[in-house]
Every structure is written in structure tokens, then in C-alpha cells.
Length: 350
Ligand SMILES: Cc1cc2nc3c(=O)[nH]c(=O)nc-3n(C[C@H](O)[C@H](O)[C@H](O)COP(=O)(O)OP(=O)(O)OC[C@H]3O[C@@H](n4cnc5c(N)ncnc54)[C@H](O)[C@@H]3O)c2cc1C
Image 1 (cartoon, rainbow, N blue to C red):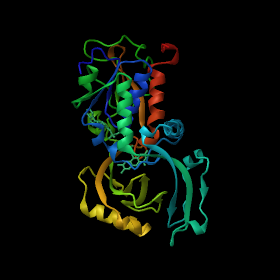
Image 2: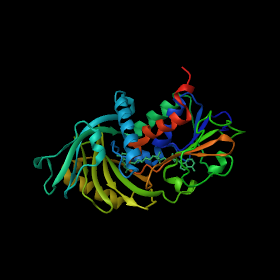
Image 3: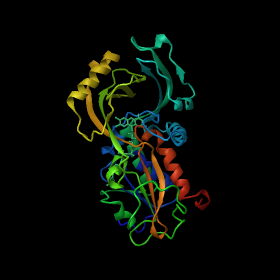
Image 4: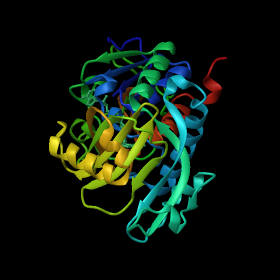
């Protein structure tokens, strides 16, 4: 991808990069993606995934990004090609626990009665939220980006300087003036006027940003033995969680929450533990066929970094990474915020 004809180059083709690229391309800009690996090999492909901005901050901005994304995901449910559908289920805990604040964005959120809790559990809540079949959803996002005229180039960016044409500040810079394609002088040579860094956990090295750290998640995919509700064991545990996300013919079983673990190879002993724990919740899991194993590195950071870094010549480097365990639930809100800054409504044609 040469880049000279591009208005925007997006780095990364996970759910955050693809969603950002779609919003910018559909606003009328010429957008390309450069990615180290195809979307199906990203952390995003490993996610469960249910709407819920977990392991992500700051609370205020995250809530608004989650609210926007909830609205968009619900709209997308109407198209079966998206792999999204609303599903009801429970989060439960062996200890007293309160639902997170963001559950009040869901219409039917309510506390569970004692009879709705598994033996040994003392708290829980029920709600309906969008459940996303990630491999299907990522295919949908790629097709939508393609329809908007976008191109994906599997070709890792070796440094941010390579695509921005020079130095950039590594740390958060605050809001920039002239953050849009038309806010500066435009690109020079092969360098596009706007670059958006959606590199997930790789931002730790690429930016570099030591505040980014992986939280490894491993899941097992099985044939669906008849599970119709999602289930999340909310009991605090050091490294393990127990969860089940049914997607029609398949179920994603989880999982792990292992900080600072960079290993992307599935571990057989972890898969066995996941199957055992899920079978203890629903014995039908024992009769299912294992279809596959997935591992992803949640890109955690104390706060999502969504901000513009002004560069020489009026160019802009946007950062959009650090979505932790909630990237699927935040991507549309973040992407639309960037698009509104890069491409204000009054500049759009048609
Ligand atoms: C097991 C598991 C379950 C999860 N469940 C949920 C859930 O239920 N709900 C939810 O909202 N979230 C969930 N998450 C979190 C969610 O998956 C992440 O927040 C999200 O995938 C982050 O998306 P991303 O696009 O930022 O990162 P990624 O998906 O990691 O994408 C990063 C992209 O950057 C590219 N890249 C990296 N380096 C370079 C480079 N040098 N040059 C070019 N490209 C580069 C990569 O190739 C990749 O395409 C879960 C995660 C895991 C692991």
C-alpha cells in the first residue's frame, strides 16, 4: 500500500481497527489498513463476546462509548450476516457482589432471586445484551470495509515513524487542535495526513507505551449441546473464570484472565480445566464435541488511550488502544468519536 492516495491509514485489523476504518471510510474518506496479521488471528477473534465494558477505563468516557456501541450493536442484530443477537443470561457469584454500573444501560437488568442461583452461590443478576460471534462479525466488518472502498494490507508497521514521517511523542498529549484530514496541510509524499493507531497490545512496543499490558484469555469452542443462555461466574478468582456463550450451533467456553502472560499458544491443561468447570455448571458440556481452541491477549491499560497527537506539517496521529476486556463493547463509540473529529459532519458530502 503506497499511502500517497490515502486520507487515513489505520494500523491494526482487530475489532477496534476495523470499526474505526469503517466509520472513517463511510464518512467519505479514502482509508487503508495495515495489519501485522489478518483479523481472524487477532485477539478480537478469541473474544466470547458479550457487550460489557470490563477491564477498561476511565469510567465516564467508557460508559458513553459503551452506550453508543450498545445502540449500534443492537441495530446490527437485524442483519444475520453480522453474527450478533441479543441473548439473556446470568452473572453469578459465590460471594456478595453488586452488578457493575454499566448494567443500568440495559432495560431488563434485575437481581436474581435465590431460586435462580446455582447451589453455593449467593448473588447474581440477569440481563439481555448483544452477544457477538466474533469470527462471523469480523468477516462482516471486513466485507463492510471493502464495500466502503477500503483496503487491508497484511504488512506490519515497523515503527510509527515509518507511517507518520518522523518523530511523535510517546505519552498522552491531550486534545490536539486541527485533528482532522482538513485541519492541517494534508499529507506529504507517501505519508497520509491522518494515521490511527489501533494496534491493541502491540502498542506497548510500537508507541512505546509501558502502561499497556496483556491479560491472556483462553477459550474452548464446542458444539452446542442445547445451551440457550449465557453464563458468567462472577466469583473473584485469581486467574480463572467460568463462562459460557452460546452462538447457535456452537458455544464458547471460558476462560482465563492471566495478567502479563504473552503466550498465544492454547494450553491443553487449561482447556481441560475449562471443560471440567463448565461441565460442573451444565453437564451437557460433557457430551459436546470440541471444535477448537482460541487465545487472545486483552490489551489492558489503566485508561483507554483515545486521543490525537499533532505531528509536523499538520498531520495527526490518533491513538485508539487499551480497550482491555471490553473492545467489542467500546469499538463503535471510540470509532465514531474519532470520525467526528477527523471528519466533522459539515465537511461530509451527500
Ligand atoms: C478470551 C477473551 C474474551 C473476551 N471477551 C470479551 C467480551 O465478551 N466483550 C468484549 O467487549 N471484549 C472481550 N474481550 C476483549 C476484546 O477481545 C479486546 O478488547 C479487543 O479484541 C481489542 O481489540 P483491538 O482491535 O484493540 O486489538 P486486537 O484484536 O489485538 O487487534 C490489534 C491489531 O493490531 C495489529 N498489529 C499489531 N502490531 C502491528 C503492527 N506493528 N503493524 C500493523 N498492525 C499491527 C494486529 O495484527 C491486530 O490486527 C475478550 C478478549 C479475550 C481474549
